[in-house]
Image (cartoon, rainbow, N blue to C red; front, side, top):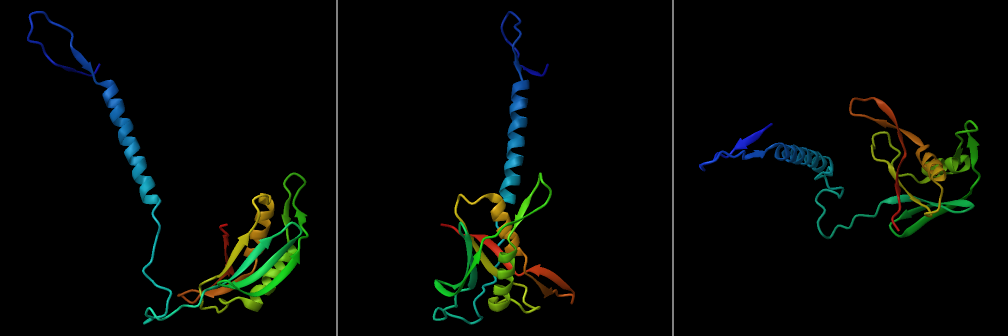
Length: 187
């Protein structure tokens, strides 16, 4: 057994060993905790960039125009597609909610074909990032009630992700990318 002999200057010999096993166990657990914490700290960092999206030479007087975004509102019986620039509503389209079930009997999914077609038309009509050299995607913001079933949210996200566009890379190759970058709204 691991221990430390503390000796004894007394007349009678005593068995005075300190048990080191609990100390070693505590040390190992502490080292493991510190290693795991170090991994969490490095993986939770956000990557940032010093690139500013404003125009070069733009001072305090320069006001950048707010970005245009398509807001998809999920209702009980319809969807509303609203193009907004800041707080200004540019256009609004209502699409009826007609889910189509696909898949086997045990694992069915739903799709909204009319919503997919309407989002494609709206992007072709009002999307800002359509040039092949432009690598940015248009913004789509999903607004839904907390009671919306998860499978419906997945179907709406699939409809938002359906419009694709060709983007040229630096090496001259063309790649298909989604036209929209989807985010959820914060209430």
